[in-house]
Length: 344
Image (tube, rainbow, N blue to C red; front, side, top):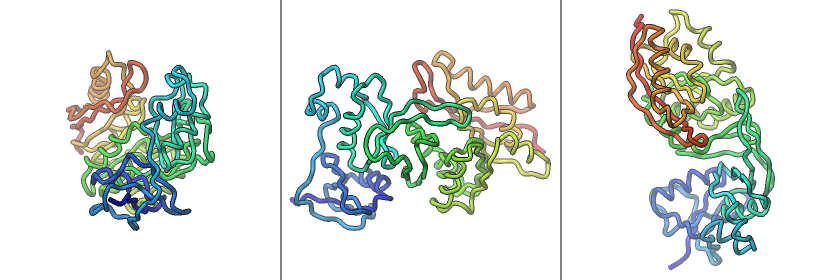
């Protein structure tokens, strides 16, 4: 049986690999290899019938993946202690690998090994955290070319960004997809903390009309670029500034209120007053929070009820979910609530 590979454009590699995996034809025992300056050879078990690729070729010299990072490091002379100190997880964002190295001392060697495991990537970044109100990432180039600007493809959405300058949370992937599924065509949405378009883009691609607000000029620049990249510029209104200022400027009776408000920020509860002013009667608010395990779900739900009650409105919680672990004993959660009252 011939060994096959699908030729795909580098700019479409991530979304195409996702589609090949969903179709069940992606061969994860072989490495993705560079074909030329614009194309990758993606290993497949058989020719895809559902996923669009540029061509399917036979490989005379297939290159098989190692079982995992541990095996690769052991082959390179790492001791058991050094392997135990190596990172156990990482994220591939476009062609950049993001890694929290922790106590690992041989970071450059581990970075080189990760590049060997992920043929589609060309840079490894050490993640040191996010700081400040504008969510500035602290990263360091560990291996590879050092190019931190990339285009990440996820569930059909393209995100252009520079991972050394703006935040991207790989662990929020399911939540980003979820927001593209819950909106309905032509509903109006306010995204209060839009970033590079994490939630704005999948919602707009689903047909919603989104007002996206972002105060970080660098993130806003990528937000604007991504609206064009995803061909949703006619369904998004992009506003640079503090979301509270935007709400204050639009809170007059002549301005229609939104069907949905998205609050993708850990301290979103500080902005609940503005969110509720923006929300039409019967609308949905999605409030994110970093909540200690012991306070699930009392704290975020209680904050919603308290703020709504003070505004003469009522809250009906219609959904709640854990997105990911934020830190030890603390969860990144989302509460979805329908807010009634104050019909004008």
